[in-house]
Amino acid sequence: MNILDKYVIRGRRTASRIWDDTAVIVLFPIGYTDRVERIFELTKTGTYIWKLLEKKPKVREIIDCIVKNTRFDWDRVEKEVVAYISKLRANKIVDLLDKLAK
Image (cartoon, rainbow, N blue to C red; front, top):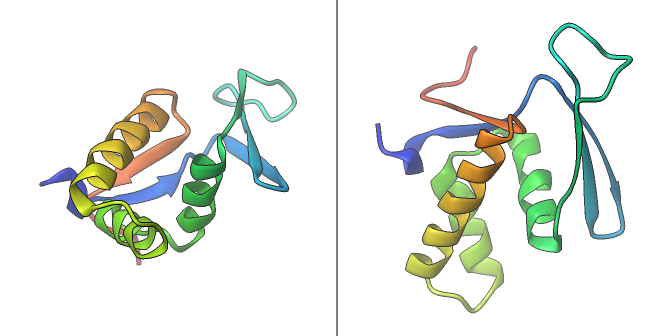
């Protein structure tokens, strides 16, 4: 399945807080909620994407939202969003799913 058609969800081992335009993400080790594995601070754009994840969108829906709210073209946004989502996934902050559970 093409990455654009995958759903993006927040990782199960994460907790977050947003201050102004900055999201801080805490990644917990497997099996623990009283220890911290890593802490991430997202950029303004990263925080915008993090907020969009509340609705469990497809990657293409994230791109569409950014294109509608900026003057950047779809191809440029696609390249950057796919790279960003891939980086978040590599850091276990998000997961990609073929379909959502009912």
